[in-house]
Length: 500
Image (cartoon, rainbow, N blue to C red; front, side, top):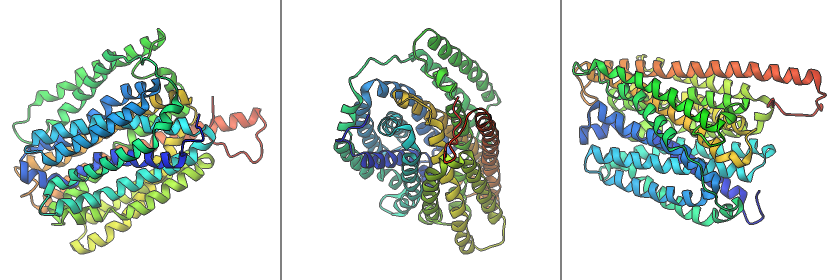
């Protein structure tokens, strides 16, 4: 429970901003992909690893960090994650080879995995259920602002001759210093509020099974380059992925039945609001990275746009994404899944409009003038999705399980992110490299085909997310009507989260 010494609003802003920068690292490297290819020659698999290493390590670290955070270690992990974030950012910025960049990205992912469950758990700790809708609205605004402004700043730094591709990682350094100062200033009181430390029960074997399953799932996508040298047997990696995933689920279920903690707690997944929120995340968060990757590479290589301009055209989405997050936090208790469904349809419309624009005969100047208008639509839609889904996912979760629940939700998002990045990247890069070209010398027509394929993959995930939202909306309506038929509901009640 919060005490008078905790500045809840300042801590909420810190948590939202931190989460925003951690999520930004999933997308922002896309702006530097062409420059990295020219400088380091990592090839399609190397580029995929630079993108995937962060998300995979992010996912692997989340659950144990959540368990340790719930056991009283939030403050210690917040410090450790912030120091590691700063050190890994420096390593990426000075990396002499692609291998060092991949290593630095992996360490950044570990830092993100340490930090993200703590910021989610802190919000759960400081704000009771009745206040979380608006709290996550502010949180979502911070996330949206950080993730929207990042590509423009990263593109500007990449365009700087002195920095080049390193600029996208240089920005981690001042961000890390600022976060460290804020963490040391604001979070000690939160740590005291959490109470004493306990020994966390972490399923190391289960974590290893889940991690190996994720690596096996992504392996064939990362190794698909479109070149004749691709090994057809790579797809056999999906068999152990399925087996490992089944063993992972079975072990988690048995451990919880025996009174111990599993990597995923089935009891949390039996909470309808939590379970459906995770399902929404699993589909929604696979769509965004692929669209961002395809668009930024296409603009630079097919249209000759500088990294700065490629990042700048998405800047208008920052204003509307913040607006969407604010509206989502304000109206989530009244409209619920209608908000997320509306947001997803807006994003789909903006995405399809962008592809149609790429196929038009408009000049590059005209394309750059129209894309920001589409970004306004997509930004609003994204803000309406993320903030309400946070609220609806965690609304019924007990505060004592806040970090663990946040870790599971974030695990679903990172698995989704990594799958989306791997599949969309495969679609884009295999189109280019499979034709015997590279990103630098491929003709504009080939880049447009690659954009089409990567966007199609992302849109499939987005359509799946819309289906999940429609099913959950129907469930909510049925539950609400069933309750109203047997229980008198106050006429001014605004609750739209059916509880079971």
